[in-house]
Structures are given as structure tokens and as C-alpha cells.
Image 1 (cartoon, rainbow, N blue to C red):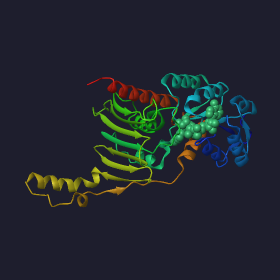
Image 2 (image 1 turned 60 degrees about the horizontal axis):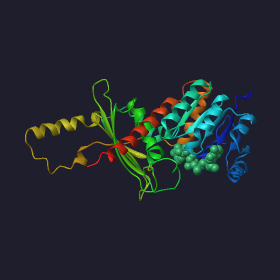
Image 3 (image 1 turned 90 degrees about the horizontal axis):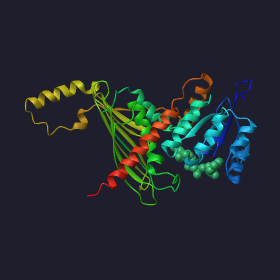
Amino acid sequence: MKSATGTLRYGVIGTGRMGRHHVRLGTQIEGLELVGVVDRDADRRAEMTEKYGGKGHAEVDALIEAGVDVVVIATPTVHHRAAAERLLAKGVHCLIEKPLAPSVEEARAIADAAARSGALLQVGHVVRYDPVMVAIRQLGIGMPRFVEVDRISPMTFRSVDVGVVLDMMIHDIDVLLMLMEREPERVDASAVSVLGDSEDVCNARLTFPPDRHGHRCVANVTASRLAMKTERKMRLISPEAYVSADFQERKGSVVRRTANDARMDEIRGQLKAGKDLSSMNWLDLVSMEPLKVDVGEPLKLQLEDFLDAIRSGRKPFVDAEAGFAAVRTAERIVAAAKALDSRGP
Ligand SMILES: NC(=O)c1ccc[n+]([C@@H]2O[C@H](COP(=O)([O-])OP(=O)(O)OC[C@H]3O[C@@H](n4cnc5c(N)ncnc54)[C@H](O)[C@@H]3O)[C@@H](O)[C@H]2O)c1
């Protein structure tokens, strides 16, 4: 379907809160032609096509018939599989919003459909493209020993088709699996449901298998959709550095071991000699640098990277197996929280 000029014919399935951003990007990225959108809601698809062009369809099959090379699937998670299977079977490349699916079984089915198809599948774990996350990775601080993550927001009454682990914590689960390059060996969790059957607040402690030096990492992850404020924070501690990042403020700070070695040697010597250092101000002693964060819209960077994977034939940055692993870890967290609840006094 690709045109002679290399332009990719682009479509978006589901034009709600997330989908409308993907539609907009279809008109902002060079080499893409927005050919159509699919939404069950006639008013929504009309609003999109009037603003951005392309044709509106009620069904995925109509978009396939019109001819499309690449789509973003941004329907509620429970509908990802139906759309993905049809599109992948027809060789259409799919960027599927996170989480890949609401269960391990459905995530497996989509990953298998991708493996059978010649088309590429990427999962929209967009935090990987957040300039704050990119800056953290570029520091090269080695495998952290301890990570602390807070992702809390007031209730939006959206994405309530899944619990807070699949809705919000999944972002951090994916980032942790990327940083550790493995799934956790042990999962402990505690959760509370307030508005429905699914959990609305969850805290999980994930222990990752040892690295080649025999060191494990523990991640303490909290997600809430019932909070009174919005916070997106991450702290990482490795033998090489302490990193503190605020994704909302788009900033962070780094304390490197190498930058503080000489000073710490001095202090170690004084402590050994029994000197009283209680009048010293720790903040004056430690050398801290700001995290260098670039500008850029994560959603746009994600789509551009997926298009590059399609054009070059390389593996997508967040492939179906990565999306599957995130859903599997999410399910383990929910199961661990349920097991804790049913354990009794
Ligand atoms: N990457 C992120 O940061 C992020 C943030 C929020 C939501 N999401 C994900 O994006 C997806 C969509 O969430 P949302 O908040 O935009 O939902 P939404 O309810 O705002 O929008 C969903 C749209 O899909 C349409 N729709 C529903 N079923 C359909 C079907 N079978 N075929 C075609 N259209 C259908 C609805 O009419 C609606 O317009 C979810 O998977 C969610 O987890 C990702």
C-alpha cells in the first residue's frame, strides 16, 4: 500500500482521550498520510476528520478496505485484541496503546498474531520516550540496587475497565523491566479497591534476579488513582549514583560517586579518627548536578521511532514480547495483593 514516495498510509482506531493526540500527530509527522479514523461514536470520528482530514469509519474492516499501512490502536484496552488480530492478519503495522491487553491470555494471543504476521507491533509504553527517562538512561549508572516510584493522580473516571495496576503502574513496570532487562523473581503487593472490584491504589515490592555480580535490585512502586494531587516521581540508587527525577516538572538531580569520592574519603578519615561532625551540613558536602533533560513530545518521539523501525525493518523498541512481559508482571502484582488479602490474621 506504501506509495511510490515512501509515504505511509496512517489510521487511528479509537479517537478518545489518547486517540485524538495520535490523529493530530498523523498530520505533523513527515512521510505520513492520515487516511482515516475508526470510532464507534459517529460524532467523535466526525470531529476528528473535520479537524484533521481523512475519512471516518465505524469498523476496522472499512479502514483496511480503504488501504492503510500503519495504525495506532487507542480503543479501551478490552477491545485491543479484536482490532489487532484483524489488522495484523492483513499485514498492517500496529502501535497499540498500553497496556497491550487486559490479561496474560489476551496479551499472548496478540503477541502470537504479531509473530504470525509480517507486520510490526509496538506497545505504547511511552514513558520510555519521556526525555526525563531518556536522560536517566544516558547517565549509565549501572543496575540500580533500589528504585522507588510514585505515580499518583486524582480519579479521572477513565480507563476504569482495568485496575490501577494495568492502567497506571504498567508504565513503571515496563520501565523497570527495561532497566533490569528481566522480570522480577519475587513480587509482594498490597492493594485497596474503593470504587469498584478492581484495585484503585496499589503498592508493590519487586525483587529482581541478581546481575552478573550477584546483586539484586528491589523496586518499591506505588500507584494511586484516588490521590488528592498528581505526582510522577522516581528515585534510583546504584553504587555509582543517586538519581532523583520528577517527570511532571521535567527535571531531576544526580549525585555521582566519582564526583564525591575525594570528599567522602576525607569524611571517612575524620569519622575514623573520632571527630564530631554533627555541626556539618550534609547538603554543603555533597556535589549534585542537574539532570540534563531535552525537550520533545514523548508521543511524537514514540511514533517517529516506530515508523523508523517499519522503514528500516528493525525490531521495535517496545515489541509484543515486552508488552506481554509487562502484562504478566502486572497480573502477578494483582495476584500477590489478592493473596495477601486472603491470608487472614
Ligand atoms: N499512554 C498513555 O499515557 C495512556 C494514557 C491514557 C490511556 N491510555 C490507553 O489508551 C487507550 C484508550 O484510552 P482513552 O483514555 O483514550 O479512552 P477513551 O474512552 O477516552 O477513548 C476510547 C475511544 O475508543 C472508542 N471505541 C470504543 N470501543 C471501540 C471499538 N471497538 N472500535 C472503535 N472505537 C471504539 C470510543 O468511542 C472512544 O472514542 C487505553 O488502552 C488506555 O489504557 C494510554
